[in-house]
Image (cartoon, rainbow, N blue to C red; front, top):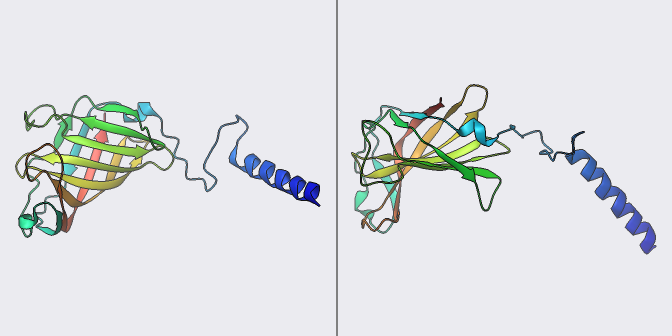
Length: 185
């Protein structure tokens, strides 16, 4: 009986393995979600635009709740990030991104004005972009389209280093969701 159960288990594992591999012995996502992302798709000069709304901060949590109902703007955008650092993640199947803004609007007090990650299997991304005017990061979620080098989505929250110690410690929702578009050239 044990041999029969073992044989069925082995057959099941072989069948599952066959579904997860193609002719090149490359593992792919079973639901067909693999977008084929490679590091070179993310290399280049990034230009980021945000919608022109003026949302207020709401539902703040963390260290400093006094930001509640503060108006924030997108006057610092569009922004250009000339030398995007792209490297593999230590803990997930994604590429990590970070860059300092280049050209007008660069904030010399912030070494990293763009950070985030793009999932290698689904091309879903979460990024933060620095607003010097409001001294906060807009938190945005979107999808990378490899064929034209664009990342589109929305920003729904903001993160703040309220005590200026270099660590983000306050997070707030935005009263209006901002559109987010980035192009990679």
